[in-house]
Image 1: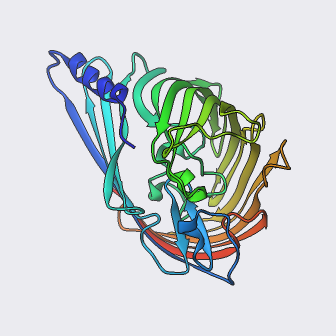
Image 2: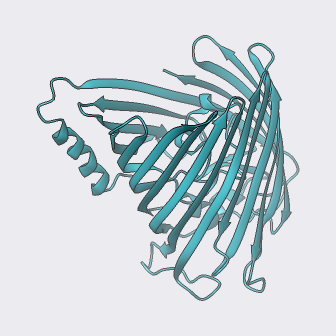
Length: 374
C-alpha cells in the first residue's frame, strides 16, 4: 500500500515545524523474519480463489497479505524485512517512517508507516499520518516476528482486509494507583487497492474501502498482568476493479457500516506465559458476523519457550439462504529458542480443522523461522 498524500504531507509538516531547531536526532532500527513452511495432510476441498485452491492442502498464515502455504515448501508467504527511521526535533516533535519488504507476491517494499508525533507532556501523545489500525494487542508490531513467542500471531484472529489507515490519534498515559493506564482515540480512513485479502476469496480483483474509521482502546497493566479492550466503527465498501462498480452484499446494499470490538489478557508470571485475545467483526446488518479467539500458554526454560495454542474462527449470518457461513479451529505447538543478541529461532506445528463451508480446508502446517531485530 502506498501512503496517501495526507501521510506524505504530515511528514513534510514535521520537517517544516523543526524550523530553526538547533539539532535533529535520527534513530534507525530494523527487523527481519525468514520463515519456511509446508502443509501436509489428505486432500481437502477449498473455498479459496482459483489461484489458491489447486493444492492438495493449504494454510492461510497471513490473510491481510495473501500469505498461503501449500504442500510445496516455500519461503514466500511470510518472509519479510523492515527498516524504520525516526527524526526527533525540538519541542517534542518527531517524524517516523517504516518500510517493509515482502516476497509473498514479488520482491517489493511498501511504506507502511509515515506519521508525525507531538508529545506536549509525558501524559499526552498526538500522531497524524499513516499507521496501523490498532484493532489487536500485537497490531503495532505484528510484522516484527521477534516480538512474540510464536512463528506468527494466530491468523484465526489476526486476519482482515484492512491493516493500515490514514488519520490521527491521541494517546493518554498515566499511573492510577498501582496500575499503569494507557488509552487512545483514533480516526481516519483507508482505501486498499488490489486488496490482498479479497484476492484469497475472489478470482476478480477488488478494492476495499473503510471510510470514517473511528475508535478507542484502553490498556491497563500491573506487575504480571496486562489487559486491553478496543472498539472501532467504520464504513465498508468493496468495489470490483474490472467494472468499477460496488459489489452488492447479501442484504442488497452496496455499502454499509461495520463494528469491531474485542479484548486481550496477557500474563507474565515468573516463567509462565499466558496470551489470549477475543475479537468480533460485526457486518451482520448486510452480510455476516465473525467471532474469533485464541488462548496460549507456555513456560520459559532458560533460552527455550515452548507454547501450546488453541484458536477458532466462527461466522453467523442473517441471510442463510444467500451466504454460507465459515467455521474452523486450529491447535498449535511451538518452540522458541533465543540466542545471540535479539535473535530467535522458532519451530511450530499448526493443525487446522475446517468445520463448515470449507474455506482453507483441513491442513497441518510445519514451519520454522529465524527472527532478528537490529
